[in-house]
Length: 256
Length: 182
Image (cartoon, rainbow over all chains, first blue to last red; front, side, top):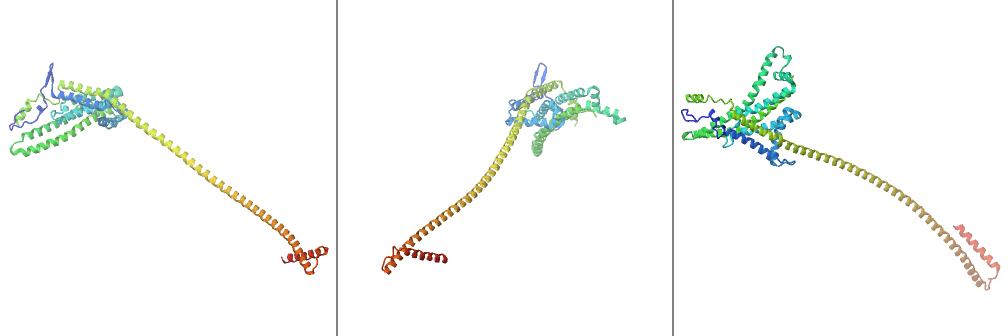
């Protein structure tokens, strides 16, 4: 917290720093790590309850689980990769989607109130796994030269501009792509959290004297932002998985 | 504003795009656990069930299909049987009608024959009766006439052979007259 003249504790980068809640052998364990691990427990716990003793005639929980599973499997993986090629990637994409979604949802859960994915490390890890997957797949599918052509968008018909295109494509595919993939998720959650914190703190800060109506507006904005964030959280999880699928699709595609 | 800048300067060492090492480790582990569970346990589980459900539904559809075909064939069979029965009934009716007609014709012929027989017998009987009556009458009339004549002439003419001839002749004349009148 800093004093900026009027005493308003504006949110900033410091809102994304956490003191360790426990230190185990020099390893500082903070709130975000705890939330990440709870995410794991929640996702596995829910799907274990839903699918652990799956029945042909599903119960309510299994039905919800199946709806979520089907959404990722049919709605994302089969749509982009097709049933035949996509089947292999279904477990990865399903776990990716629900893991990211729950990490995002922490943003609006009381007490937690912090999206795990607004710490760049988490999106980065996931984007790196996706990156390794599709790059390795490209080499496996097309061989070394084929993979290089795939990365650079090699196309003879381009003629003189081909070298330029190849440089741009190589740069864009191999260097920018993983970065944007991770930052897209991170930045959305980061900005969303900043907005939520700002309106929440403002509605508390403005709650005195003649400023009370403004506090009301700020509070209403907080509520609106929570609804909006719920939407953004789901969309970002969806986009992340959709992009992962489309990268893999690019790796599988025959170069043109 | 200046205070803001000071704050930013103080936080310059914190770059939100530079990942802290421990977080990378925790994130990797957290996701790896989720992925492992989905991959090894949960999705195979649910896929098996979904496959079973698909098979069950398809089996149900298949069963319904066979039952439908069966029902169709049974219906066809029944229809054929019904048509056959109708045909048979029509045939029987026709036959019965023919038989009935033949029977009636036969009965009629028989009746006719019997009637004719009866009539013939009646005629013969009547004829015989008539003949008997005529002969009896002839004798009676002859006797009566003779008696009457005897009485009239006062003497018996019974033994007289001519008498009978006279009577017979007379009666024959009567017969002839009757024949002619008829």
